Length: 55
Image (cartoon, rainbow, N blue to C red; front, side, top):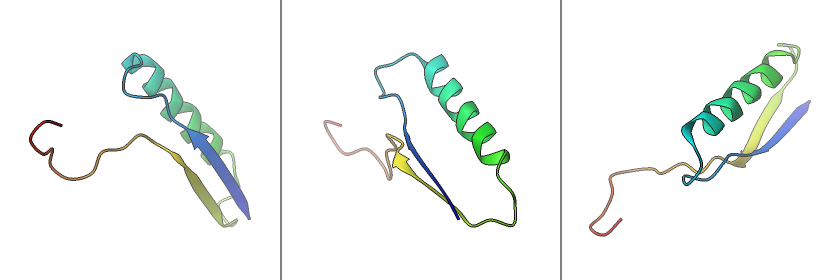
């Protein structure tokens, strides 16, 4: 079993930093054996749903 814990750059950072973060995350994940159970956890600074007034 593998556990990857990651913290993404916040929305105020440059887009290049976020791109690099997700590229590094994918590289790390792809190095793990496919037969292993892998959990990817973390703070990905995602926004779900439609924005409400004032957001």
